Image (tube, rainbow, N blue to C red):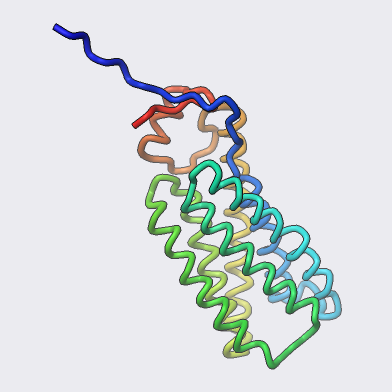
Length: 214
């Protein structure tokens, strides 16, 4: 009688670190400064400084996270980071050009479409990484509210968008911390709602770069 074949594993000699922390930190930075503008914490004449944060911090960090995400085959997260990165770039460029009332309809429609586009990675990610999906969902909500505010020029929608941005900042900082601790210590430290094979690998203490070959 033939002995059962043992589980096969694949070893990656140069594993890459998770891009989740850097992506969520970039998201937190962008969301916070834009919310500060929407809530009146930053005066209008400092909008150029906000544009610098969006273009020089939020955009490159999320673009980097997207590139690494595609490299490690985390397609859902990488897609979300790429979509968000382009959103920060567009908003940063428009802010740096100064107030342009004529562009508010184009910007509003762009933000709403971007929010809808984020539903694609959320749906494809499922419940595998619940914390990541919640953060991306909150980002979609903030974009939708900001887009509506641009289209309507309603102070109520602006305050709602600012509040959603603050909630997003907190969630993104939590997720960045949780995934960074998990990656460096090789085990869950803070709850992230991980399910499926990823949770099983963490529970079994798999070494970085060694994963079951399904």
